[in-house]
Image 1: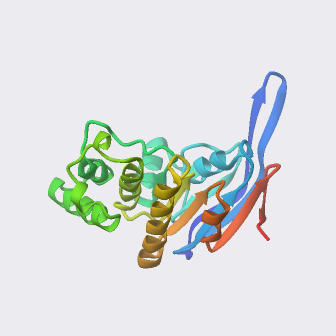
Image 2: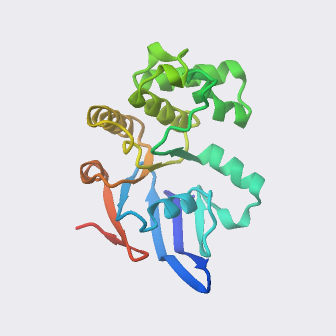
Length: 227
């Protein structure tokens, strides 16, 4: 098994508008090692979120290949892709996407239950991760009873609870006020150091990107190392 948890080779993505084909990604190569963190920065509309969705097997490239934990995504049917995401890929978005009718504990336990974990074990693991993100006292609260920063912490706990090979984050602090954003960022660094989790982060925030092992710039469909 390669020490890379995620490998992308010659990823291209294009869309057709009318009679014009617009190429968004023009041949992306990327490798994410175990415990490695990286940021992808670039202007709005540069294709950062599209690339992240392709890396996470939520979108299909026009050509090229993505391999997650040794499995080439293009060779899998939708059911096996879903199982691969559930086991090996965590997602955190700008908006938390928590289920409003469920408590923080139930939201975090959800991917574990989908995987087939026993309810008691799923609840135990969810409580463990909520404690790690500083919400041990808020496990029974529903999203409407939590602040924006707390909801994003729950979303991060939900992404980490299945212990994925890699977590993909799309502007995880972009919807927070500066104080809440700083608190979430500090929590992320603590988790990275403690658990050696691989992260790929899309962000407009240069300070956030500066904490990562590597930073790439996505411009005109190509990735380059940030100098």
